Length: 106
Image (tube, rainbow, N blue to C red):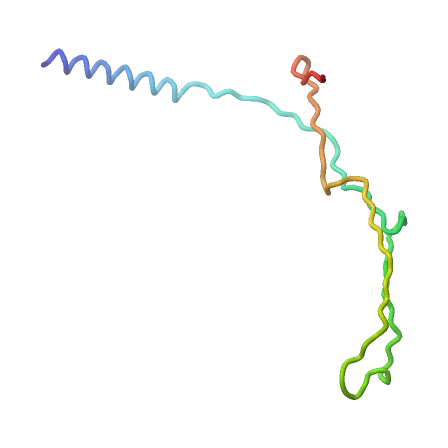
């Protein structure tokens, strides 16, 4: 019986030693350097490169309002085209500049 207890104790000590050495093993580390520019996309409104204001104006005077009911104005429409040089607000392109680790292009 003592022999079995000794073997169990030895096994328990061995497992404890093994698990503690794994827990204290150095974890791998890596350095990551990120460089580049972050720029929002350039967008234009109706082809204008400077700031553009699109206004809707109505000639409204107090005498225009009916005594009863609702006031209905003539509809106005303006064509507004917003064109941007990117599909998303923020984009980035990763580049691997570490020799020998680049992804091979096909």
